[in-house]
Length: 245
Image (cartoon, rainbow, N blue to C red):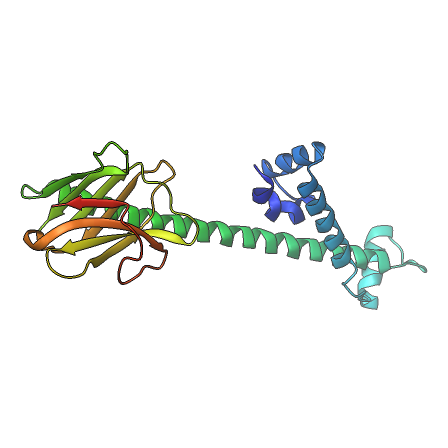
């Protein structure tokens, strides 16, 4: 595990309640004199020390003192300092509260991550299902692009009158920060129509689907430009992909 992944466990490690394998990972980082983990654990221990001083001493009831002494020694004691006992109780309560807090926080973070992953996977599955639906239609129109000697992005566009447009591309570099690719359906007469934003993957491939009916007969081309990530109503740069019908 890297330092970013271990950052949420420093407090539990400082309390001595962190379980494996995270505890072993932090120990390994500390043994390697990892500056990030050394600093993080040091700050966590300082925080735990400060928290331990925040619990005010609470004197126990006199009757409780006598009963405890009688049970332990068989006789009442004349001199007994309860301050260390109650300080230990207070410290234990703080430790228990912190352990519960950090475990609850960790569980909430993990739940949020799993929910986000589930939503992302559901969207990806729906997108792939739409892509396969378009590919499997008998009357789908297929157009190849990027076959020139300059080796631009290559791939195919599939147009189905009822189900939409599917773009499959390779050799398409990931968009820079703040940018994304925007697909356009270019009619034979009129301005390009926005057809959705997408990003290429780390392996320079891309799959983008525009669902819904499309007038294939009146479409002149399908194009892609690089735009700002929230999209634009009309292209502002030269197309990186043009699939002419």
